[in-house]
Image 1 (cartoon, one colour):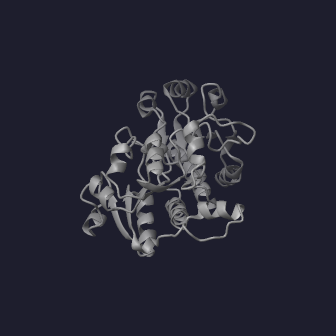
Image 2 (tube, one colour):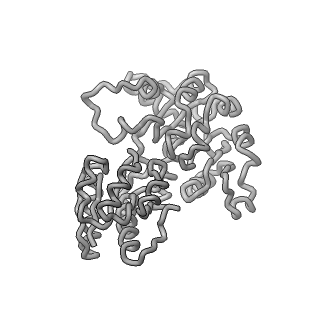
Image 3 (cartoon, helix red, strand yellow):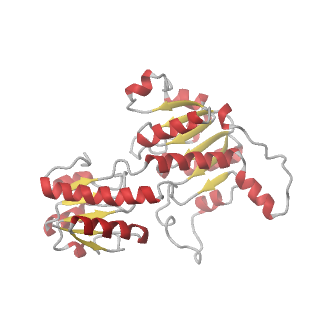
Length: 329
């Protein structure tokens, strides 16, 4: 059995090498992303391990089939950039990591919300200007707020527990309600009902065609004045132009964004010597009531280790047994 891992970061390499040694399996590691120009590196291998935000398209799966690749195991949860129809057509098994560390992302979402509530960005600017006055940046307490959680999968449920630990009222919405949460009376009657009640809206839903731009001009208008938005899920859940307008008008009081609608050319790249030619991103970056982070909610030692090991285990399991629990349906 031979596996090749594409797009490996330095912080992942050690975990991959440990796995290869422990399992006595030949593993090739490359920093290159998996594209039509790099797929030739996979010749002679049985499976591919990868992580990227650029697409896995029909052309890639066609080449995999020609090379005898049997499995593509991605080191993340999201599969919105994978052409699953093409994978099936070319007889390539696709696996993902359904849960690498729900706590990492849930904890980060609460961390960012607390910064919004305590006006940390504004006070940081004041400190730089030697302005040590308190007013007018008075805070709200989380325990007095209603937090609306959209998406009650593993991450959303951990987030709900953390928010409840602060004493906040928690309500939720999910297209596929979980029986235990429904029985506990935690779901809002509808998405509009959640919008009307919530002081904070935190997104933990996957990106699908159906929920693209779930938050937009019309839905912002249904929310409480000064609502806070937290997005550690997918950038496409929010119409960025409409969010900026809502932030300017005060309909949205602040936003913590760990993911951005057009993030691929920006996040996880060193652009320190480059002018970013994205007016929407630059406008968000300049707003004092916005916290931007480069898709790092997942980025903990525990999560990275789990992402690597589960992805490699999935490929090994499929190549050994012909079946795997982490298959993407």
